[in-house]
View 1 (spheres, rainbow, N blue to C red):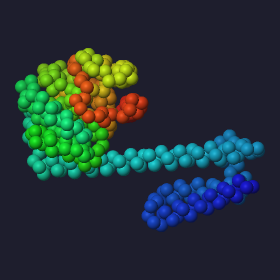
View 2 (tube, rainbow, N blue to C red):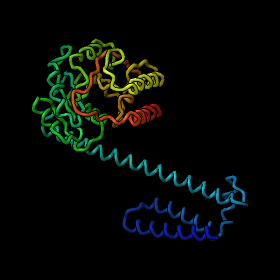
View 3 (spheres, rainbow, N blue to C red):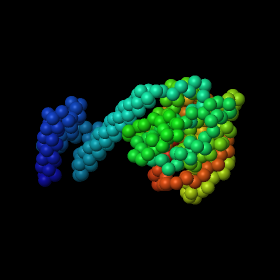
View 4 (cartoon, one colour):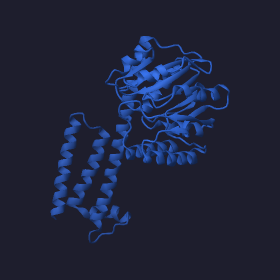
Length: 345
């Protein structure tokens, strides 16, 4: 009896709270109806629990003992899970809408400053978050042309709070300033959009921390111009790299095998940021990942029948500062989610 009284009190409190939130405009009508359904169920269970027997019996919870309570708990938990998933979905939608607004403002700012003309050129998209110390060397190391194409760097300052933006501008790079940090995947996506609007023929991406050697860029671009590939991926596994940790080394191998199986293409390095892709191929891609975008890019290319090849590159230690990547376990978890979301999509 005490449990039934407690359930009735909880139902009354929930109903009162919901009505208050609805009157303040903080709750939608559909959400109010869902809460009303829950509170009605609690009140029925408190006042006349036998009325729920037909529903519980249909679900396999026959009257007697504690089976009715167990049935109510199962139903309430399922309902709660549904509300949680709905909340997560709404948060994702709001996050995407806010990110799209920030990207729109960043591109409008670039247009106001004078959108670059890159017709037939090679654009180099460099996502950067607080890399003022490393960006100068990255830009100075970059050649003026690659495989006969003029080279134009585009630095995407992803919510930077240091002098990355000013430093890149002073060295002649096109800079896209985004006021909200969203991640390297979102930064690359924004750079891709700007490069396509400017008429670039080839788009290269490399990191802003000095790990990639710009002098190797010709090896990535040449196969595209010769018509041998739609995307060329740099591979530290085929080349050389300075190992930062054994866990990351083994992680690269494991994810390489997984992506090779899912994509039906042999990939040896699924996480390097050094690659080149044709504008035609880039327009066909559907990129959504804000952070762990490399796996999405490879799988989407493979799914659409594009030709992907890998070339050896040397991966160096970051020139200075601290890595912006999450811890090994968080990185593995995020990378795994990106792979499964792309594959299921």
